[in-house]
Amino acid sequence: MRMMSYLLGEWQDNGSTAAEVHCALDGSVMGSIAGYEVSGGDILDFARTEGGTALRGMTYLERAGLLKQIGAVLGENKEEYAELSAKNNGATAMDTFLDVEGGIGTLKYYASLGKKLGDRKWIADGELVQLTKDENFRAIHVKTPLRGAAVHINAFNFPAWGMLEKLGVALLSGVPAVVKPAAVSLPVAWAMARDIVNADILPKGAFSFLAGGGRDLMDHITSADAVAFTGSADTAAMLASNPRVISESVRFNAEADSINSSILGPDLTEGSDGFKSFIHEVSKEMTIKSGQKCTAVRRIF
Image (cartoon, rainbow, N blue to C red):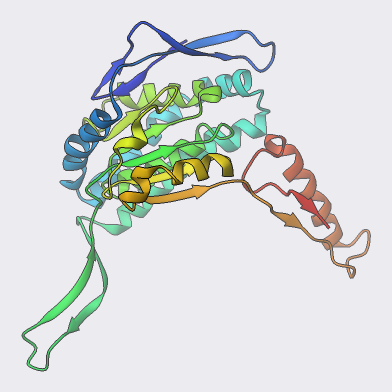
C-alpha cells in the first residue's frame, strides 16, 4: 500500500517515504506513507475557504444526506477494512466489528439526527427575549457553523470509529474536517479516506486527510478553528500548550488517558446476578482491544 495525504483537493505524494506500516501478525511491511510538501497554513486555508463555504451553503438535511452516502460507500467495503484491521492491528473479529461497524453505524446515526434537524442552516438557542418595555428591541441567540476548520487528531486504537465519529459531527455542523490519524494504524483509516474521496460525495475542502505527521498544522490554527484530540495525556498537554492555541484561545477538546474503575460491593455474593455482571464486565473490558480503549477498566476493587 502507498498511503497518501489528501490535501488541497488532491492526493499528495512528493516521492519520499515518511514511514512504513507493519503487519502485527508477522512484522512484515504492509505499506509506506508518502511524504507531502503542503504547508499547514495552506491546508487550513483551503479547508476554511473552499470546504467551509460549501458546507455552510447547505442545510442540515443536505449535510445529513452526505453522511448517509458516505456510510453506504463504507458499508460496501467493510470486508476490506476488516482484513486490514486484522493484519495491521492484530484485531480480533470482535475488535474489528466494534471499530469498523461501530464507526459506520455512528456515522449513519448522525445522518439520522441531521434529518431531524431539517431543511435549515442554523438553530435557535432559546426563545425570543423582549429587551425593552415597548417591544422595539428583541433578541434571540442562534447557533451557526464555525467559520474555521475542525482539526481531528486521532488515536491508534480505533482508526475507523475514532475518525468517523468526529467526521460525522463536523460535517453535519457545516464545518470542514482536517483528519490526522495515528501513523501506526493508518491502513484502515486511509482505505476509508480513499473510498470517501473516490466516491466524490463531499465538496472540495470539506475533507482533508493527513497521512503521517501533522508537522506545522498547529502553528496555523486560529480562534475560528476547533481541535479534537484523542490520545495520551502527555501529548494532549503538549498540543494544548502550543503558543498559537493559547494566543488564539482555540477550542481544544482532549480525550486522554482513562482511570475508570469497577467496584464490587460487599453485599454482592458469589453467584449473584451482580457478581456475575461484575466478572463479565471486567473480563470484557480487559480483553476487547486488549484493554486499549477509553472505556476500559483500569482499577478493580
